[in-house]
Image: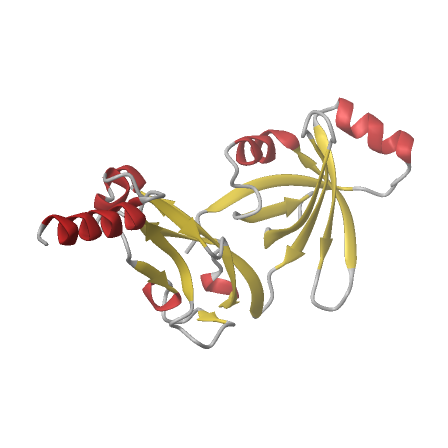
Length: 205
């Protein structure tokens, strides 16, 4: 299960542009929490934790435990993000409150690429899907999985059935043989091999 990141938030009763601008000056980010019933709650969130996750590229793939004022903390995940067009600074965040069952994007991170025998030989990873949709229970909500490439060679495929997903989490794609990525040889490798074979045949004539 993804690590829960703690967030402190306050109710936001004034959604005007002036109020929003004042929030940002005070290190807060305007946000909204949606639930499965279609109810929305306007909030402002301390920017520090969100900025760190954003800078690491992990904001959209994280699960948060958010406490609004003195209320009980609730589990949420990011549904949408608005960024500044020039600075990429966070402007607004849409959160989704976790329900009993949640249809979420599970992002796929490829790790240990430098140890892959195929990549060491000059190959590269061809990514077909960067995420898949999954159905996750509230208590086992994840937003990403790590795929280890340390033993992958040229020609090998990573398929949905190879993803390290807990059994309780189900992919929306039912064909578990669907490819996620594969290790491809460097350009020209196949042609070079074919040319060498032809030259060898000519020399043996």
